[in-house]
Amino acid sequence: MSPRREPRLGAATALSLALIVYGNAKSAWLGDAPAGRPAGVGLGLGLSGLLALWAWRMGLQREELGLDPRRVSAGIRVGLATAGALMLLGLSSTRLLGARRLVDLAPPSLLELSAGQLWRRIVVFLPWDTALPEEVAFRGVLLAVLRRSLGTTPAVLLAAVPFGVWHLTLARLESPGLSAWLLLGKLGGAAAGGVLLSVLRLRSGSLLASVVAHETLDAALMLGPWLLARREGQSLPPATI
Image 1 (tube, rainbow, N blue to C red):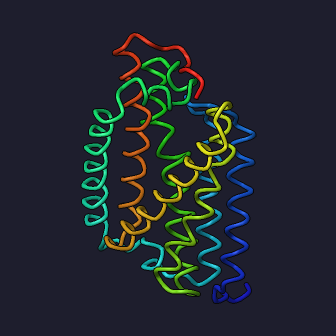
Image 2 (image 1 turned 180 degrees about the vertical axis):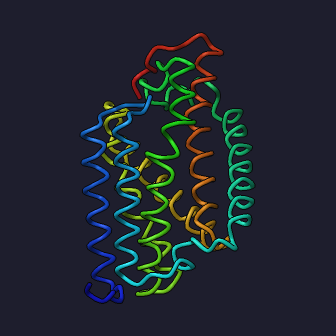
């Protein structure tokens, strides 16, 4: 067996490009599937396993990856606390922007889900096809490699860039009529979310913090507009933006 190698900046660059290509290719293959698909779970678990093997070959330690078992409880606490704060912020935005505006910004296919489909998406599919693999990839392996090469602050900022671009094809599939500016806004929002998730991961010392926050926030972003649309008796696609 060949010896494990020390990760360098070139490895981080290659990993970033590979994740961008993979994430967009996966979205193009699965299509706009808000209800979730078993294939997405398989891809997510497969990606997580491959990245774990790559991290081991690169000599990354479990503490660097946020996998220290001593930090599990801290990770769960930080993740849940942050998710609660973000949900309160979301309620405030509902009052500020209005329910109709938030429904208009939601993907049409999400609003058409039945209650059962939405529940399965959040509970069964979302943890394994989105929250876990994306956190392993960006706040686990990529962040660790970048920190070794560049230090913490540049690593947090740079890891957010491929995370934003990872969502390009998905954003275009979810909202085909989205203007270029709104598309950039969505990708920028994803990148900003990546910065926040990296901070949670580093402050707590556990990848669980970002996994829990990611899962809870995505669930709220799905459930909130869906409930608002049902309250207003609307399940049709929103008006063109």
